[in-house]
View 1 (cartoon, rainbow, N blue to C red):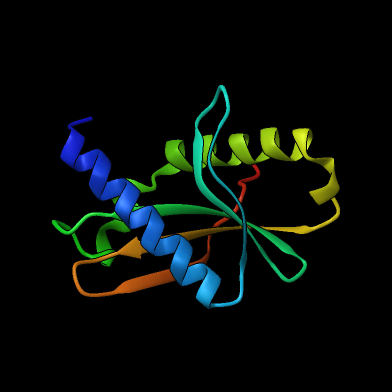
View 2: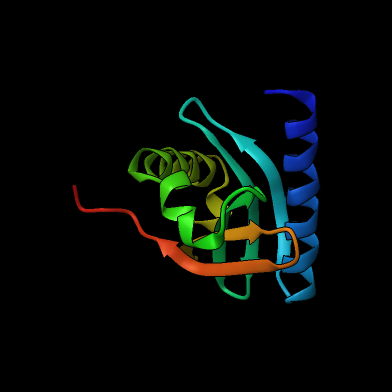
Length: 120
């Protein structure tokens, strides 16, 4: 990944974390990796543990998120969430939610429950 793109992504994650904290969420972890993938932000929203994918890209609008968070990406996020929960069992009784925070050129859009684990 080119350095400028990495910096844009990190800057977007910082903005998303600040946005979520301002909304009352507690950031538990950032950039959690597993053999299957990575989760940008893990937060707690009252009694809900939230796994957050951050998309900071100015070239496309929020309406194109479906193309960046396809089924394969969702699968990797879900598997990484399971990996995190297995290693951090104190969160296992909480409801799980998968959100996306879109950092646009002029705005931040928070899509709660953007996807769920499929039955496939």
